[in-house]
Length: 202
Image (cartoon, rainbow, N blue to C red; front, side, top):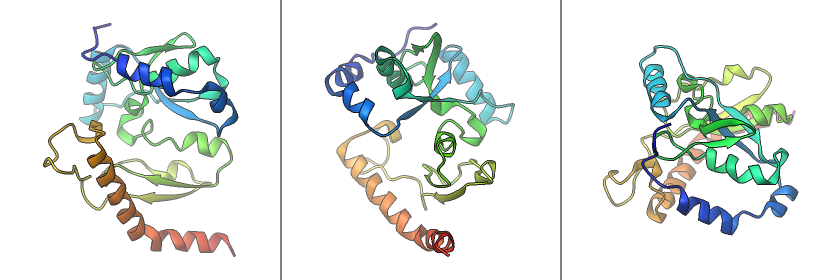
């Protein structure tokens, strides 16, 4: 596989410092989205082909973190953030994985992790999309009430005209702006959400 463009050592150091596997074991079930990679360049080519309508990418795997051996939990978390070409993939239980957002590209399967919630018995799920043009289809879960919140406009990038890394630029200004926009979008969607909630109570 080609050498990654960026080092994941800073992220690894943060995880070594903050990841508490004991607390994780006692916490809520945690799933991450993982993509079975064929190498960064091939993954990029597959995503481009899917974007052009020539097939799609493989589905992502939703991995339950607590079911992994503790030594593999960090690897799975790092794999879920391993963007192709930028960061190296990670081996989890004998398979090389990268960022699950590449999975099921045409219908956003890997970036919309509803499956583990439905499998766990949730019958109502709120999905917050990152773009209004997402082709994810709630009809894939006919027995589940899916409430979708879509941004009214392209996510705002505070203070820089939107030219400093987009959704990968996790500055405090950006995250504050995204949080505010998410709140505003949710409030606008509340009328649509109240109706199915009220129907479930009768």
